[in-house]
Amino acid sequence: MGKVLLCVGKYAKTPYFVEKSYHNVYSAEELCYCLMQNVYLVDREIMDSRLADWLEQECELKELAEELRTLLKEECRISDFVGAILDYVGYAGREEAEQVKLGLQNGTNLSIYEKKKVRADYFAENGKYVLSLRSYDALLEELPESETVLRAKIYHNKGTAYARIFRFAEAAESFKLAFDCDGTEESYIGYLASSRMRMSETEYVDFIARSTQDYEISLKVEKQFEEINRQFDDTDESRVLAGLRVYKEEKDMVSYCTQIESIVGTLKERYREDVLE
Image (cartoon, rainbow, N blue to C red; front, side):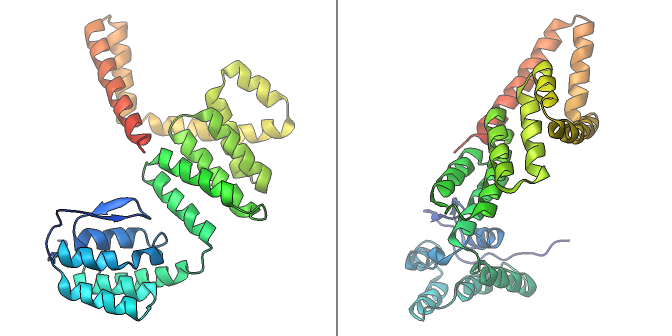
């Protein structure tokens, strides 16, 4: 049985916008959850008197608000500021709270570019692919040429985000740029896999035949595709497609078309969510 969490304060009518994680929060508990889930995104911007005002006015947590204002006047560390919120609300256990504080202290060692990458990665990991791509592009524009290792990671993750929304041409280009920066096989596999997805079988075979290196790595790509196909065979989606084949073979076009419309509708909705900004 899970522990019971006693909520503190009121549920806000007007949310507080946590810019780094791109979230609106409506309660002290939601604020704590947001802070804990985005430790490496949080920076000194969270140490704002407006947050103290919101906690007092919207959540009626005057005591916590006054404590935060005192910490701001003392120019405290970010780990102390966030720790005060977690401790007051009691959202996390002592061990969890200490891990968050440690994470915040470690985050101070990240460069501004690394923090911005973490923020863009967060958007991608949470399905906000368009927002992540814009964040990656903005970061690449300001990133110094000397940051080749970080640049490669950004291009690689950008390729992954493009692939998630089926834009395989852009994904292939991004993976190739990542490979040009650091020469890792992982990025080259991403480049070949994206190329395979956007090309016809004949085009892809011709493409691979041009280079010995491409051919050797392409064998690894094919093994990955085979494994993915095996995994797909055990999914509900695979069973639905098998049912469609039965409808088609039995010429039950009413059931076939109804099922197709349902599947297409679900896929469209999922895609809209994926490209939502």
